[in-house]
Amino acid sequence: MVRRNDGRQLGDPAKAADAIRAALDAPHPPLHLALGADAVDAIRAHTTDLTAELDAWEHLARDTAFTNEEEKP
Image 1 (tube, rainbow, N blue to C red):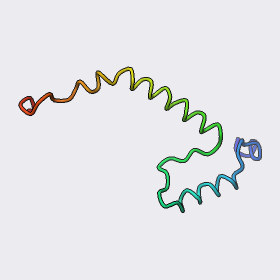
Image 2 (image 1 turned 120 degrees about the vertical axis):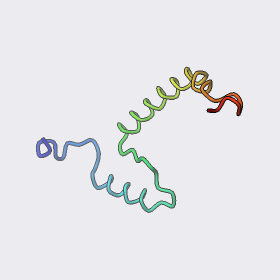
Image 3 (image 1 turned 30 degrees about the horizontal axis):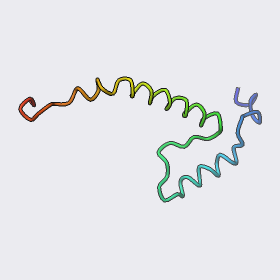
């Protein structure tokens, strides 16, 4: 499969290597590095969905905190 798809990938491997080197050389390298428009689009879609879900359930998540020191075990 790898040989069959060689040269047909969406991105340029040399540009990807340059991007990785640039990220590694940065003063504050990213924890995650998206390479390619398809990766950026997929991550943006996922974070949009994740944010919407967090917004919808935030009240429930925040309600799990202790209300005062006396309730702690």
